[in-house]
Amino acid sequence: GAGVSQSPRYKVAKRGQDVALRCDPISGHVSLFWYQQALGQGPEFLTYFQNEAQLDKSGLPSDRFFAERPEGSVSTLKIQRTQQEDSAVYLCASSFKGGSGTSYNEQFFGPGTRLTVL
Amino acid sequence: AQSVTQPDIHITVSEGASLELRCNYSYGATPYLFWYVQSPGQGLQLLLKYFSGDTLVQGIKGFEAEFKRSQSSFNLRKPSVHWSDAAEYFCAVGPYNQGGKLIFGQGTELSVKP
Image 1: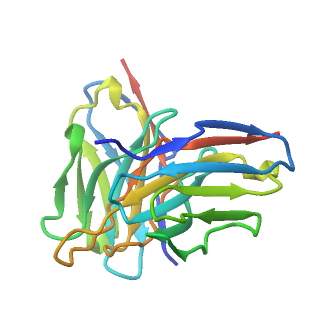
Image 2: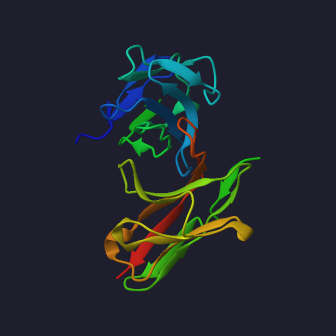
Image 3: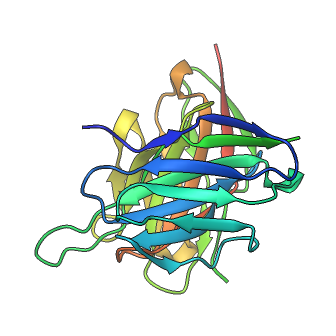
């Protein structure tokens, strides 16, 4: 009964460095979401995958942000040429489609990766 | 525009006192409503959710919430607060269907006085 896991839990990067953040969703969950949570704010949507297909990336703040889920399970969020404004907690969530056509949107969250850009 | 408003940024209550955290939403379709709790350094834990049926929903840890369509509100309540309830609380709204993003409020930080 493992939950959503994320690694690393903490990442410090120098401005301009590239970073990669990993998310392991709950086994069998077809949907995967990335959210960004700035200090003192609620999470904000970044992108959504259903299996390996990225169906919504409307929340990605710039073309420096890229996400992938090549085999429909583990996902990686990559940030190129990090900037100080990228400092935030990055949360991953997963949810699943029930049987017999049931479809609902209860999202289970991981502990997050705290990114600090110096 | 779709949005969630939590009017209280920070609330302090005494242990054993009752609690109500406010949440108002703006959403174009039938909303699926959630309350999550976040302790320092932790992810979001689901307290309760509402989509349809009885407008008073029970959650974990003794929390409940009441959906009021006419007021576009989904307030969280607890009759008697425990020191361990100190945390950040987030209200969120999204579609019922699979794959819809959640829209979160900015959160309410709860402090509990002994």
